[in-house]
Length: 282
Image (spheres, rainbow, N blue to C red):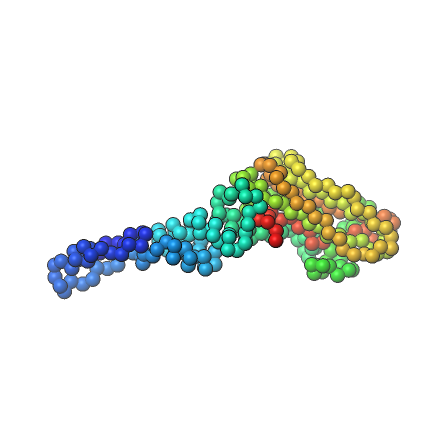
C-alpha cells in the first residue's frame, strides 16, 4: 500500500512507490484512505489561513486534518493575526495566555449594556426609583452626536435605573479577567431641557463573585440651570489595573428636574455603554 506523507510536508518515498508496484504491472491503484491529505509546509499553510476569515479557520479549516488543526490552533497564527489587524496589548508585560481567545475578544468588542438607547422601551433595565410621573422614552429633542433617535427621560422626582452585567455570561471568563485585567470603558450621554433645570447622577461598580464592590466610579452630581443650551454631554471613565476577582459590573444612572414641574422635564439619557477593551484605543 501507498504510505501516507509526513505531517511536515515530506513527499512519498521512492521505496513506497516501488513496493506498491511489486507484483503485477496491471495492478489497480490502491483506494485512497479517508485520512489522506495533500501535505503542505506549515508556514505556507499559516499564510493561507491568515487570509481566510477567522471564523472559517476555526469552524472549517481546523476540521480538515491533523496538519490543518495544528496550524489553526497555533499561537503564532493568532499572534500574527492580532499584529496585522492592529490589536496591540495595553500592557507589554501582560501577554495573553490564549492568543485566539484574545483575538476574538478584540474582534467582537461590543457594548455590554442592553437597549442603551431606549429603542425597546425599558427592556434590559431594572427601574430602581420611579419618582414623579416616572420614567418615559421619547424622541430626542436635540440631535445626538452618534445618531441616537430616542432617549430616556426623568420626571420631577428622582428616577434611577440599572443593569447588572455578568462577565462570564458575556464570554469573559475568570481566567482572562484575572490575568489580563483589560480596561473597562464606561460612557454615558446626557442632556437637559433648555427651559428647565435638572440634575444627572451615575455610578458604576466592579463586583466580585459575591457581588461585593471592588472598585467604583461615582462622579459628582451634575446640575443644570434653567435656560441652558440643551446640548448633549458625555460622561466617560476607564477602569484600569483593578486587580483579580472582577465578575460583574453594575451600571446605574438617573436624575430629575429641579423645577418640580409635572410631566417629563428632567434629564435626558441615551447611548450608554460598557465595553471591555483588551487593546489600546487608537
